[in-house]
Length: 229
Image (cartoon, rainbow, N blue to C red):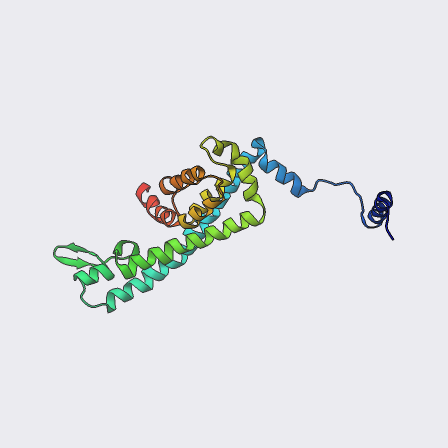
């Protein structure tokens, strides 16, 4: 049976009345918090607090708990002394390259007492890679994933959009910016989300010159406190 246009619309209305429920939308606490994070007056303090908490947790877990609490004890207490004892040719060039560069005092070769100062491929090389850089990168990306899953990263992009426009970028350039603090490689890959070649060039230049990666942050975290006392 062929229906006229009016009959079809009447049928649609009757079906809609049976299956569609209309209600008044109420703002939830999540909606209220979401609105606060994108307004400059409240969003900027929230962003500062979130980033401060981010780096505080990052430093506590990566630096204090993982590196100082576990890997320093493992490498300095067990790995370094064992290699210094079993590797032959103490004081030779191969020993200095692989195990411990050490130092000479009154003609006597003095061994280093920690992996960070040994400068050997199997000591400092492994310690920096496994004990400093790896925990920093793993914990960084776990925390970044958490911020993305709770929906804060898009709101941060909206908040910072005006600032980044002043240098020719959009707010979502904050994503490769934060990614680069973990590793520049995925950060450069993430610049694909930028619209123009000019924006990608600006972003990659900033990544290469001004933003340290996780490896550099890990080294700075260990070196700077010693330098400034």
